[in-house]
Image (cartoon, rainbow, N blue to C red; front, side, top):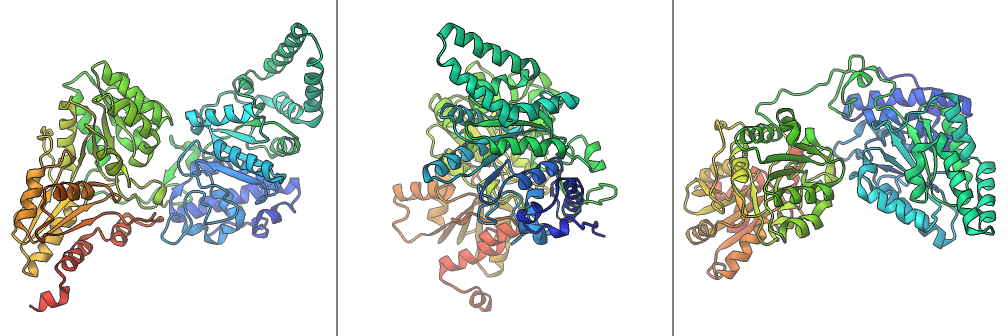
Amino acid sequence: MRPETPLLDQVHIPADLRKLSDEQLPQLADELRSEMVDAVSVTGGHLGAGLGVVELSVALHSVFDTPHDRIIWDVGHQCYPHKILTGRRDRIRTLRTETGLSGFTKRAESEYDPFGAAHSSTSISAGLGMAEASKLAGVHRNVVSVIGDGSITAGMAYEAMNNAGGIDARQIVILNDNDMSIAPPTGAMSHYLARLVSGKTYRSLRETAKQLNEKLPKFIADKARKAEEYTRNVFNEQGTMFEELGFYYVGPIDGHDLSVLLPVLRNVRDAKSGPILVHVITEKGKGYGPAEAAGDKLHAVAKFNVVTGEQSKSIPNAPSYTKVFGQSLVQEAENDPKIVGISAAMPGGTGIDIFGEAFPERTYDVGIAEQHAVTFAAGMASEGYKPFCAIYSTFLQRGYDQVVHDVSIQNLPVRFPIDRAGFVGADGATHAGSFDIAYLACLPGFTVMAAADEAELKHMVATAVAYDDGPLSFRYPRGEGVGVDLPERGSVLEIGKGRITKEGTKIALLSFGSRHADCMAAAEELEEYGLSTTVADARFAKPLDTDLIERLARNHEVLITVEEGSVGGFGAMVLHHLAGSGLLDNGLKIRTMTMPDVYLDQMSPARMIEVAGLDQAGIVKTVFAALGTEQDAALRA
């Protein structure tokens, strides 16, 4: 039964919200929170972060003239209340489903989403660009970047603030502090001071004093400036860092108290110049008991029972690849004290948390700082350690210059376990691991592997430990393994050598990574059509097993490469070798199967594979297309 929401029922767009009185807004926030909990219980998704910004979402849309004013949410996990308030309530129960709403902000979805965000720490840079574009166009517009305490750990946020402060941009940043608790607000005095320093009177007096200072001798002016800074910092020592970057700091304030939020945001809105940072303290999971009690504040959930908070999770048939990686790394580290684990704010998502439980002194979570993580790993490798820098494929893109410059050029043996390789389902295009094969296999000296199943992943962990001749990566998908038996311990693979998993004579299916099981199933189906089929697991995109590839090319009429990655990856490497070897000159029918050259929106992983044509049916169809024969005709023959 859905919650009763009489006020929320009146709000279809933010203009409706702005018709309500301040006294009505706490009730609206309560109804919005209930609606969000009910909706996410149906769809699953990110819950805790959104619950923490319900009052902030209401306040922002009440104070600012959206969509003319811009609100940018960073990362986007907390955008569900914003979506409900901006004309998407009727579709909120389609979150993260095929043809439904994205789980993140998305420009194509609504005019109230001025900037798409699913990777972190981009909001201040984007907001600064919007603010300056409005200035150049002669348009008065408020631009508000809402950034979390995790996102603000990334260097990009400080680069943007340094730029904004340097040009005295008219930009507003809301620091949503829901975890670090840098400086919790303490009672009425803190709230009074926040209203005071954000107000027009104080700011105008401060500007007058600054202008007066310019006319005073330098010695006296410096003393006056320092006295003013000291006075503010006695009450607000937290703001010093932001002030040094050129931002006017306000806070900290209680992000769940609308009687504080509204006047402060109005004061900030009416300020005439300069970048301003408002420090807001919120609580993830606020207002929903099971979320407040959970260790992770129910950050990301499956469908759940609203009353109990119990999630409807399926029972896995096989261990997840992430778990197999973490356990395998622990096993290897028990015999090798040089192994260290590095994560960029995703220890649980990458399996580094498993390693951290066993070896806390050898585990490093550097925060949302992929660039730093890569170069940090390079520094450890330069001193003889064996860093496993575990970063999702989509997030490793953020550290690509460091991969090239600090790791590859110096040929340092950094190991990159790449989780979430390939399609990821409900998180859509922003989180898909699409490009790592292409962007790593092109680098000189890089060894690039992909696991066909969970047993192969164990072997690749062991191989990575043993390999010290340069950088190495191994990729594996999200979710469960395929159910193969796991060896007690991984074996070291011969570098650059694949394997034949099924022998045939006419068709060759050469798989790289996660689509191997579909190749095996396709081969069985092709045999029913009378097409004798070989299946090979390449294991390596670099160095290629050229002997294996040449054998397949010479001894088969059709060669199909299959990978869950973008164009320009493994198939391109194979084609490049075959062309250079002259093996494309004698009638070989070859096709490369990759992810389609488009960004696929959210849908189930299985559906994504089907749409991409990388499943069993797609492989069989590609074989018959290469032969120039219809499947029905082949079956009749």
